[in-house]
Image 1 (cartoon, rainbow, N blue to C red):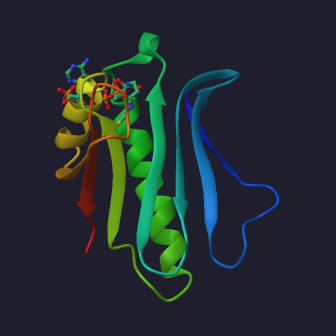
Image 2 (cartoon, protein in one colour):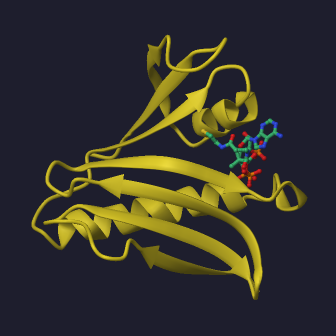
Length: 131
Ligand SMILES: CC(C)(COP(=O)(O)OP(=O)(O)OC[C@H]1O[C@@H](n2cnc3c(N)ncnc32)[C@H](O)[C@@H]1OP(=O)(O)O)[C@@H](O)C(=O)NCCC(=O)NCCS
């Protein structure tokens, strides 16, 4: 049975900032993972990466992992008297078309496009409102 495990950065970051990796695994087999960051003060969680082993794709694992990240981020802010406001994540315009469909399905909106960051493609910024 698949379970989540959480790995926080060691040593911990300064103040309320945190970097955490959420890993979904079945025993020793890693199904997928996501890493997120917050400075800890402003209700913003930034997902740095999310990926699922292609052998386990399209079974809802990616959505479950992002849901877990949101749950962790909510807990982080609420334990400090605040609340989660926004989750953002970047997607590569051409090489992460599936990732973009994935984010749209999860309710993220494309809110910006960064040019001259990647080679021969744009970097697209997606945001999910949580308030
Ligand atoms: C994007 C990724 C994390 C999705 O993981 P996953 O476990 O397959 O996703 P889920 O099964 O939870 O899919 C949720 C929704 O995403 C979309 N989706 C997922 N895989 C898709 C595919 N191959 N084609 C089209 N849409 C897809 C669908 O809308 C799907 O909902 P549905 O199955 O009800 O139609 C995975 O494909 C991956 O690791 N890709 C490479 C890395 C990457 O692009 N990361 C995201 C950067 S933003």
